[in-house]
Image 1 (cartoon, rainbow over the protein chains, first blue to last red):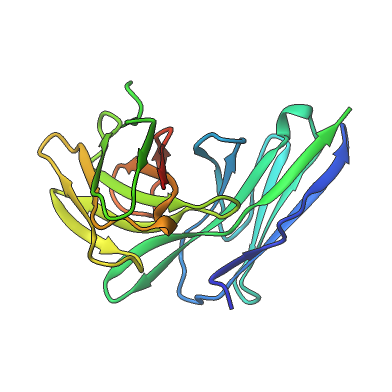
Image 2 (spheres, rainbow over the protein chains, first blue to last red):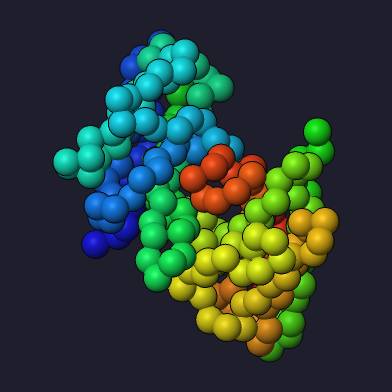
Amino acid sequence: RKEVEQDPGPFNVPEGATVAFNCTYSNSASQSFFWYRQDCRKEPKLLMSVYSSGNEDGRFTAQLNRASQYISLLIRDSKLSDSATYLCVVNARAYNTDKLIFGTGTRLQVFP
Amino acid sequence: ETGVTQSPTHLIKTRGQQVTLRCSSQSGHNTVSWYQQALGQGPQFIFQYYREEENGRGNFPPRFSGLQFPNYSSELNVNALELDDSALYLCASSRGGVDQPQHFGDGTRLSIL
C-alpha cells in the first residue's frame, strides 16, 4: 500500500463547478498535512495546511479525518486558473527521520 | 525577499558520470530539503539539511549525498549516474522542520543518456 494515495484523475469540470479530491495515508502517527498545487512543468506551491478541525481559505476547504486517515480538498466555483495538479502531502516519522510524503497528485482541468 | 533558486535549470549527463546540483535557500530559512520527481509522480524525499548536518533521509542509496553551507545554501551530489536518475530535482527551504511550509525552487531537470 502506498503511504499516500490519491486518485490521479484527470478531473474535467466546467467553470463554476464544485470539485472534491480525496487522499488517504497509511501512517497513523502522521501529524502534519498539506495540499500543494503544481502547475505543468513548475514547482509545487503550498495551497493550504490541513488542520484537525478543518479549515477554509476562500473557495478552498480542507478536511481531515484522523480515524479514517483521510484528507479532502473541496474547490467551489472553479476557475480556469485552478487547472493544475493537486498534491496531498503528509509527514512521516521513522527512525528519527521526519519527512514529507507526497501523493502522485490529482490533475484538475477546468474548461470554459 | 529572495526565493529559492536552483542551478543549473537543465543538465544532460551520461551513465556513470557524477553531477552536482545547487540550491540557494529563501532568506530567513535554515532548512533545506531535496526531492526527486519522476514524470507523472509526486516528489520523493531524498534528504534534509539543518545547520549543515543531514537531518533525515529517504530511501535513496549512498551515491546520493549532500552538503549545506553556513549561508544555508546546499548541494546535491549524485555519483555513478543511472538512467533511472533522470528526473526533476527540487530543492525546498523552510524555517525549521517538515511541519513548516516548504518553499520550492524551479528545479533542475536532469537527463541521463
